[in-house]
Every structure is written in structure tokens, then in C-alpha cells.
Length: 71
Image (cartoon, rainbow, N blue to C red; front, top):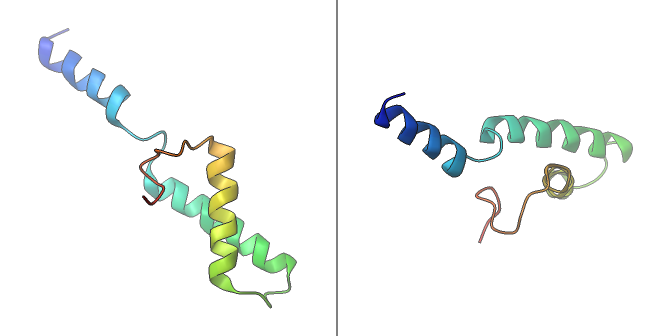
């Protein structure tokens, strides 16, 4: 294994998020839909999204310093 490929592998392990942001976004969108469905789509869409975001991040074990969470 060359030195370059070792460096790339180390970077991928140490520097990459646990999952692609697009995959997390899709999981949140689906969860938000089901949360809204439970209320008969009568609630606030943003509140449903934020609740879904908390649930998904909790499920994924997101840390407070996750790159996905706002400062």
C-alpha cells in the first residue's frame, strides 16, 4: 500500500461524517412526514421537521459537536 493511499484511508476514517448528509436528510424527511401524519397534517411543518431531526440524530447517536448540528 502506498503512502498516498494510507493517507487517504486515514482521512476517510477520521474526517468523514458517520453517514452522508443526503442520507440523513432523507431519513429526517421521512420521519417528519410520519410525525405530521400522526397529527392529521394539522400541525406546523417546521415543528415536525425539528422533532424528526432530533429523533434521527438521537437514533444515530449524534454528538453535540456533530457537523450536522448548528452551533
